Image 1 (cartoon, helix red, strand yellow):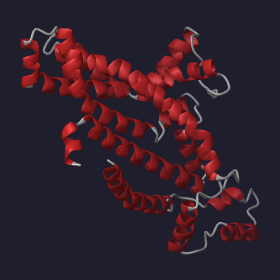
Image 2: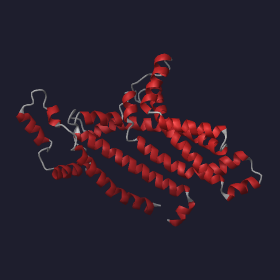
Image 3: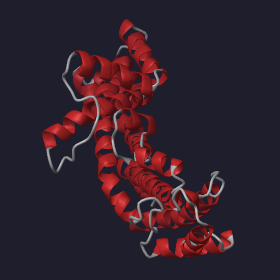
Length: 315
């Protein structure tokens, strides 16, 4: 297992290098000059030149990249051009928010998607199956921003059950923090639930055709035991690996959802950084997001091996 993980990590290194090159190169295509925003209204030429020299903006792009990646390898992601705050410090402030949102979204996705997928598979070609597929299709089709606005109007404005927006750290006020995260997590969770439902249904139907399932029924086991202990257990493999990948996507930040509910996570941070031409923040956030997604891919690969005895035997 250790050798397998080591090989996967070695594959991740060139991937991260390529990602870093793309991140650094593409942000250079953003229109505008960040020093113009930093120099104030007067925009004194001497001040502009000083800022360009300070942040090495006059150097060739290849030298800028080399300087940046060398600092990144030492844990220095640079300083925000807008707030003059270390980028790593900004990431440290926003990352817990995004992780909390991702975890709560996955909880909603599991609660809704997995039971619906099991029911749809067990009740194949019945009304329950058709209704579950319609709900899943609706979850994939309804835009997150529209669902979020409708929830704010209904749950917050009319019923007054939950706060419409804002965020409170779970370490400061856990109850308030969960209240502010319920609606955005539900919005993201419904879309993920639709994906999980379809994959759960497909995996369950595939396992239910296996010979050992027919053998379990022939032994006189109850349908509940056959479905939960045998079928669902063996169908978990694609569900778990898919869940790890979906969690990795959530770490990238749900831009529209965070904007609608005013959640200070990665999504809002990257949008603000792009509008402010804050190159260092854009580079740092995107690179950290790529690292998170690659790590979740590694987790998915490891879980696949742990859940599949045949893969373990081949290691």
